[in-house]
Picture 1 (tube, helix red, strand yellow):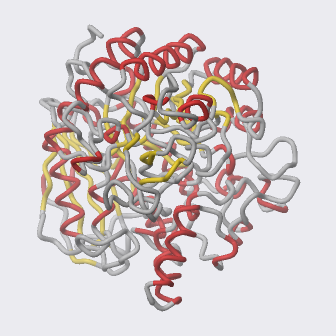
Picture 2 (tube, one colour; picture 1 turned 180 degrees about the vertical axis):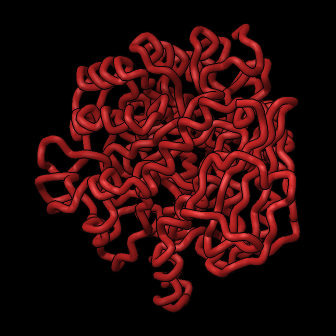
Length: 543
């Protein structure tokens, strides 16, 4: 890790996230798989992305859609085989694309061999691989709650103790205080590195140093010690990209996570911007109108805070978040305009952008009936909120807005049955709007959302200001406009966006009227105003 701050390959890269069970089915069983991903690599190469982050495909009982791993070094049969994974790594590499594996290191499945042994007795050598506490069968060690509902403690009769789980009862937390656990994990990571992956996304990595007795669930006192040890033992032995999911990260901790010295990670996913439309101090299901100035302030603080001291990940949506065009844009008459606007606002910033499958064609949320959903978190939340007496229409409104299955509906490839995703019955319903919103239609329309994303990816590789420029937010108090400047000694770029569906009076500053328009989501400029969701990038420099 002796490269300088600016020459790491992932700083010029754009990452594409795939949720495998919903991307492409190759065998008609209704579940996406690894051969299906291979069949779409040319599409991704043409888009211009540099690496693919693949959600977990390891062997798993699938209680939490693969985030409950029972074997880190095998592939679940629903997705294919280890040979298929080797083929994917090789075929992607031929096209200049790396493969980023999703690692779940905070917990395993309760069907993992380690846990099957651990629960047998307190004397079992694997018992200390997990987090156990004494108690009586009816009185848990404390009142900590799991993220998916209910107590964070589960009684194991054989051991006569409670085990700790921050998520499902089938996802017992690993004990990172045990050095044997850490060495097992490092051996497994090196094994994947030897198979040729280019990096790892680390699920809820800020929770590995939990101290449940003190009710510390994230950012525990040994967290950075563990990350630095893991990097020394694994990631530093290759030129890898590592991104940690860290819901509890703030700017100061993110500087440690992503410091240019390379002692920990390349970057983290932080989620402060996702809080701008929920009630303060409440859950994500407690909706509030978008606080636009708060959103801008959060984005600006992270741009300014990590400049030259860390590195940002840039994303609007992923497999856990709603579709951005429905969440922050307009999934009705201005779907294409707002999708392009959101893309320009995000990709104009400093950091590594992540495109979630279907984002590049403007896929939308899917407002299903409750029986059509599959996500454990969503279904648990529905039951709990109904029990709390919240009216069903209000519960469903929040699910339609924030439910994780919004992002997990099948990829919309064409207007044939099941959107070209499968020849069988899909594991979850296809969004009914697939006949209008699909890859085939997007590729045939030179003005589609797809070509906006492809142009943005190309621009980031052509203009150094995207990677190196400072960030200055203009008009922070504006309730309508998101405008900022990126600047180096040799280049300047202005990104201007009307974030809403109403015309706004605004004059482009005189200096910028002579700039080169890099990208625009309308056919022409209109003096003195920005139309609904209008956005553009303009450039001053020698190129």
